[in-house]
Image (cartoon, rainbow, N blue to C red):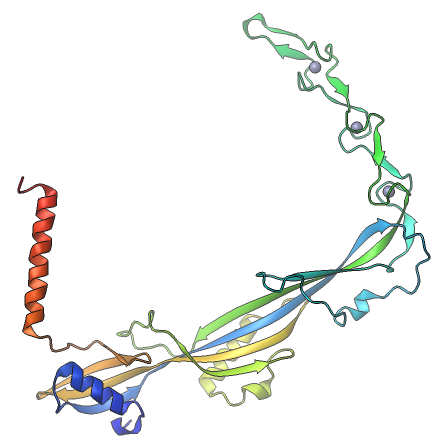
Length: 318
Ligand SMILES: [Zn+2]
Ligand SMILES: [Zn+2]
Ligand SMILES: [Zn+2]
C-alpha cells in the first residue's frame, strides 16, 4: 500500500523523524499488519428441577404448577447477582402428592442413624475390643464395658429418632424445586497474528466494534457486517463452545478488538531500514535508534560501578 494512504502515515513519519534524528527521513512503504481478536461473552442460564420431601401441608393440594412445562417461563432473579456464579432456588409449594414419608415409611420415626436401631454402640474406652492393652503385662478386660464391647447409644436410647423431614407425622409430600444458575462464559480468538518480530504481549487490544444480543444468542443477521476472517473466527468460537445441555443463552456480546501493528520501510542517511510501529502509541519495535554518545558513556559507567559493587560483595577487595 502507498504510504500516504494510511491515516497513521503522518504520525509514523513524525515518529521516524524523532527516532532517527533525520528530518529528511523518507517513508518508502507502510503496511497495516494489525492484530485482531474476537471476544464472545455469553451469559447462560442453567435450570434443573429436583424433588424434595416436605412436611404434609395439612390442606388439600390443588392444581400444582407443572414446573417441567413452564420451566423457562418462571421469572427468577439471582439471590446475589454480584457473586461469581449467581443462583436462585424456587420451591413450588403445592406441587406433588401427599404420601407416606419415604424416610420413615409412615411411622413418624426413623431408625437412629448412630446405632442403626440397635440401641448400642462400640464402647468408647476399648473401641469395641472388649479388652485394653496393658503393655508388657499383656491385655486386660475393659472395665468400662466389662468385656461386653458395647455401650448404650446416647443419641436415641430407644433405637429410633423422630423423623425430621415429615415432622413426625409420617406423612410427606413431594415438592418441586427449581434451581437456576447463571454463568458468564468468555471466549476469545486472535484472528491475525502479528509478525514474529513484534511481541504484542504487553500491548493492549482496543475495542473497535461491539455487537450485542439482549435476548438469546447473536443472530446470523447481526454478524453479516463482519469481514470473512472475523466471521470465520466467530463461527469457530461458537462451534467450539456450544450451549450446554439444560441451559439457554440469555445475552451474547461480540467484541472485535485490534492492536495496531504497522510495518514501515524507510530511508535515512542513504540507508534503507525497517521497523514496526505497535499499539495506539505507535511504539517503534525492531529499530536501531540513533543513540547519542553520552548514553554510551553513561551505560559504561553504570556497568563499571555494577562490576565493582559485585566484586566488593564477593569479597575480592577484602
Ligand atoms: Zn418421616
Ligand atoms: Zn469397653
Ligand atoms: Zn441410637
